Amino acid sequence: MRDEISCGAVVYRLSPTAQILLVKQNESCWGIPKGHMEVGETFLQTAYREVREETGIKIQAVSRLPHIVINKKKFRKTVVPYLAVQICNSKPRCDDKNSEVLDVAWFDVNCLPPILRSQIPIIEAALLLIG
Image 1 (cartoon, rainbow, N blue to C red):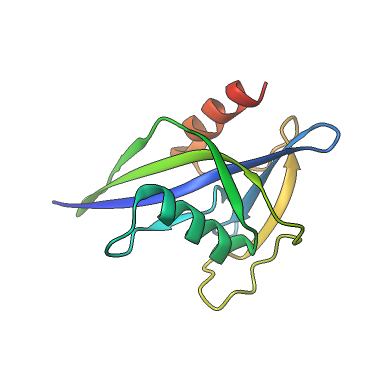
Image 2: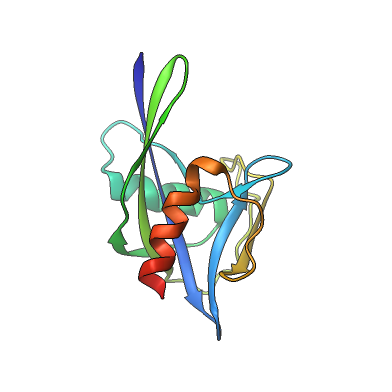
């Protein structure tokens, strides 16, 4: 069984209520922007790059969230997430040539769309910190 590492972020804002930025990863579920590490990258560098590629925005990490492990038949994936804020004025978009997502949008934390089951613990941990 091979090991994989993905890094990403729960990006939030207070506008005026708490919102998080999610990406549509398939026809029915949303999740956090994340992706695989490239050679020589740190966890944080990967998270910054992946969020930029999948959403078009730049972020600053606020804290690291608990990682999750997803066991598949042929591999084990560790997802290393951060809680982050946007540090640019760009509107989120998913038209980067390296983006692998179908859509990107801000959601009120009290009205979230269907989330990928494996990522629910990440979002729950982030919401505890956001308050």
